[in-house]
Length: 66
Image 1: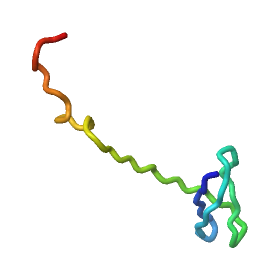
Image 2: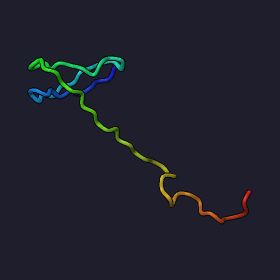
Image 3: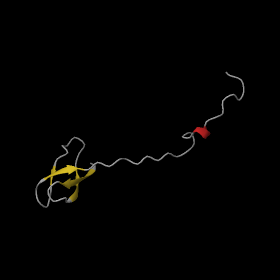
Image 4: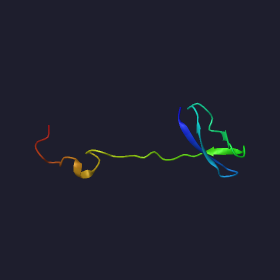
């Protein structure tokens, strides 16, 4: 089960909660018991290897067409 980070709208306390994929994105703050909101972060993307840049492709016009 994934761990999600939440922030309380009332006291701004941040906490983590383990929830399943099918669970609702609702959790109460452990400090003040008010409603909190799930924080979303973008996933990092790392491009490794060749083929991601214009200069990595073969030059056109080399040889005869197949």
